Length: 288
Image 1 (cartoon, rainbow, N blue to C red):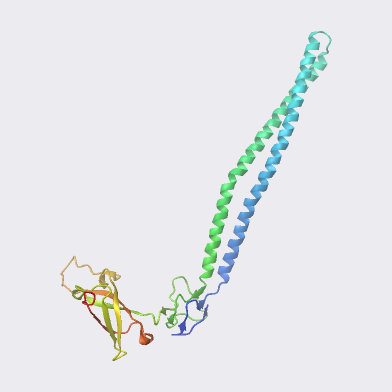
Image 2: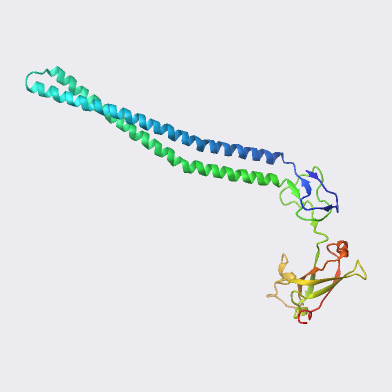
């Protein structure tokens, strides 16, 4: 793995932050491409098999026509020899030969017709494989897309402008999915979450003006407005929310997060995430 940025460095959206060794993922992508190629080749070969089988059907039909014509001729000859023998002008040997030839040619005609039916059934079987092979192609395409997506994850890009945090990983480290590698703070596009008491929200509404002072910037006041009020108190979003339905209950005033968006100011780039602030909201501003 390679780290492309330093601690607390400014980055732009699209800058490369981390580069994971892509060798394994490239091999999986190439394997998925080969699987897709094999699936497409099998589906295309099915068309060739279908054309070949159609030609086989035509050949079998032609052989069946010849065999049926020979069988019909043999039957005519056998009937003629029977008539001649009945009139006393024929020979029993010729009749026996004609009868045997009739049976032989009739059996050959039946075999030829069976060959036609078999060839047609084989064509139906080939056509029946088309849906399965098409499904194999779509499955191979999905696998290739998944492999390419996994490969794209090996290059980690900055999603927006900001400043990176201290690096949690270094060159040569082995990381797995879910590893916290580095964070980006979208400075100076900052906002503030003020945790007001629930008793202070009676007249507070979205759109009201707010004034913010920050401990690290004495004498500097920032202006903004209330943009969102949380749907629940902070304790409700805790990993283990308090359950006041059992045991002794002590009433505690809850805190409700309120988002404040700043108005434009040249001093915003001096703000940092986690700073302490004092927020004042003019709850009458929207009424006036």
